[in-house]
Image (cartoon, rainbow, N blue to C red; front, side, top):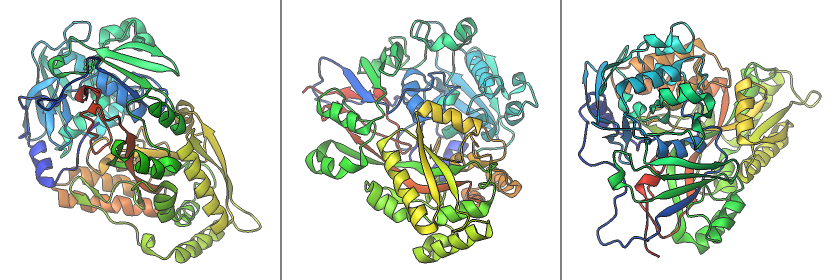
Length: 542
């Protein structure tokens, strides 16, 4: 999942299909004269145990970090924002609505059997099918693939999806309207092909190492739950000649302190993220190994808008106004994060989006307005607001939750009771709606505000807040049909303005990604979404 910031000219080129195949794949680019280690093995912490390695059953970077090394899609987005061919060697389009992709000759699964256009058709049908219950079932509909939205809602059958195999090596995708970010959206890991024969034979057990086949640079060798996942180089990968690292181990360590300790002990080459309370010291003592990268991602607290009192927008808006986000970004975090008052990003996909008016108010004025809103909603000293605030287990999330709850207590007399769950459990809790408010974050799937804003549309498979506003849905429909980036930005601003009033989620800060990276790891280049791929890295002699 992929792209750097693109300006509107680049997006127009992408939409027109003018950026197509290039001769060189984006893989490990070792500078001439760089001595390489004899042992090309990498250990990277991945932050948590993945919920699954089935690309249709997952929704976060915890899974996609691994899936992106084990599967290829039709295209990828390079760190400079350009589109790169992967399983597709080239493509063309007619009227920006009928796209034809030509697969690379001879591409195979990791077991050596052929990957065909029909595999992609079946995989995408499986993704949108309600039977699969994919968190990304809505995604092809957001791309405006014919019938995708209706299929995800159970109104049409998966075989009516606007994707067909013209022959074994040619795929045709038909859209209901031009989609400016179509090629960038196509790089999302939910759209990688999966093996129909394997899944039909083994069901949910197809991701076990003894059954698994993929299409990427690595294949699954070992999976010890809550201990490690090991990938080994896939000799059948179409671009194996440009892969350097032979073995990669992903660890599921959610304790940031333990992550750093094991890094210092030489057991880990790349940490998942740096502990907030150690950042300044690590920067001082290990500055050359500290990497801070901007990221198109927003940290927020999401409400269950169907559950009292959070079915009242006044309560949600009051809690948003009462937070001092400058303190959270600068003092609690202090790694370069920016306070957030919009859900997407201030500068994304060639569009600049503006904060709501109340973001520029003095903090005292915001708190006074928040108290007034709570009083109107029936809460006060004699009837204080109390609710559960859920977060997934992590020192950083706990630290932020403590800061947030203390601000609400001090400024409004509100009591937020802190609860934590393991990552997979928390995701289940969100999708079943068994929560009051929950810590979450969204990493852009592509460089466009819709990647954030679509998740609050009525019925979207990622809309766990259950927010529903017909005017908001209309703004997002209009944005998707906009003729240019300026018009699209106008509708995105309308959508953000509605979210600022209705507050189904409180934006807290916009991300940076922080890592410790061993000096001998070459090719570590996070993209603007925060992803970095083992196949692009190499181990220098040390």
